[in-house]
Length: 129
Image 1 (cartoon, rainbow, N blue to C red):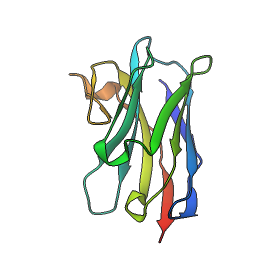
Image 2 (cartoon, rainbow, N blue to C red):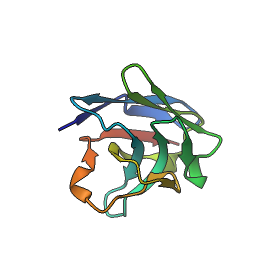
Image 3 (tube, rainbow, N blue to C red):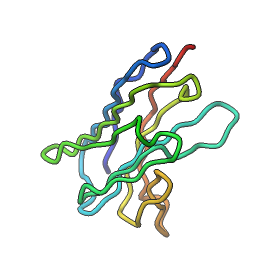
């Protein structure tokens, strides 16, 4: 089964930039959605941005114009370029992949078999004011 490895988190001042990477290790789905989610302790996880195997993208309203999701087609590495970061962007960021079932609100939509969803361990982004 595919595993996901995230890198690129860190601490930055408001207005700064970070780039997150998500590298699949092992088999990847033929048609897929890959996405970035974030979670603050005590709050629900929220979708940030998603990209599918055709390169179509979808963003949460809160990050539109500031974040850009992309992928390296040759190696299926997914990136999240985060510019003009705000303190409210502080969270643990997770990448995920699942067979393609659509995208909405910056999230990959789940299919009927949730066991096919794969999650990384997360990388912390801290934005100070």
